[in-house]
Image 1 (spheres, one colour):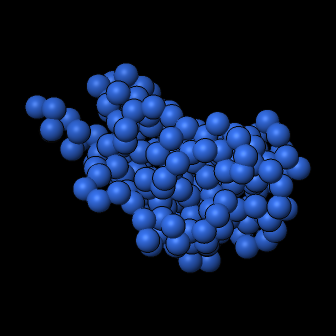
Image 2: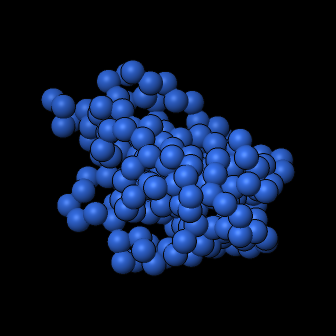
Image 3: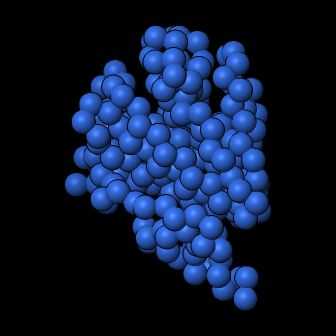
Length: 186
């Protein structure tokens, strides 16, 4: 029966309808359909981790929702990386997106003067392997401008981001999603 529930939950997750399938422990309301989305794929062989990264414009900010299933419980750092390439176990994504060449930090708390625009913090994964991160980043854009994340990638790391230097000590890259350009979905 557990397998049926997980398959049922995953089908809702992948279709964009997610109503708290982790044995009805969480109710996660979704905003209107995202402007952009991308599937999250594991970079680790034989890992069941998968998910969806969704992106909305929110005034002068970008709202990002990361949902993963099949992940190791605990905290995992999540960052926007400079290149839109998940090859080579996510290493082809390059370093953190850091157009101003500033220290690593918590972009919401520290702002762009003291953190990379792609320092999204941590996603918390529960004991069922489900994790959800909702974050709205002021000044981020969904284009190719100075703070644009279109054409880049989202990386989920194996460990928590401790906000230390130079990259938060989050460890290896366990999952990756490409961030499409709005023009690519027209």
